[in-house]
Length: 253
Image (cartoon, rainbow, N blue to C red; front, side):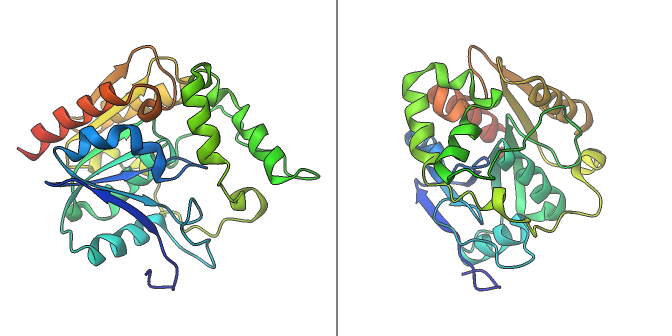
């Protein structure tokens, strides 16, 4: 239960240090399922549906994902976690590390967004005169998903997850609280190990974010995942999990 009465839904498994895994826009915790068996051999994997996604409650007023995550960690009595985020979740992970540095042991950004980064992509989705199913189909036709959807299994998994997206963010004004100073201006303040992963065939904006993180976060590492696009947890779960585990082990000492 969140302070304002809302709720997140959390998938948990495994033993060991806590690894908090944050999904991308229109997705939910299921995007991590292909990686879960490998991750759960070394870590306690905690994969929430963020506010407004999956089975979590919809926003009812001003909220922040970072506030929700603090409430989650407090409820689970977890003083410190490795936080990993995909796409939108990567941006949330960086914001969380900046706002609550004492609660974060390391950050892993997978094809992530970044608050305050000015990219070139058009994220608008047509909703007027459309059913939700039509809007979701238009979203999945975005260039972001072109490479991942070449693989029928990835396309099927993506279709299954996004079919449960509420479409709320397309039809409402999102009252999410944003930091006064965006993360893109504050990267030098991060004082935890950070790994920026990006798929070889992802769009240029995501390569630019990964390179910016590597250049401006002290000691950050950057790695490219060969042969894939924007969705490493679905496209190459074994390789992505291996990169995450190797980095997190070193980061935790």
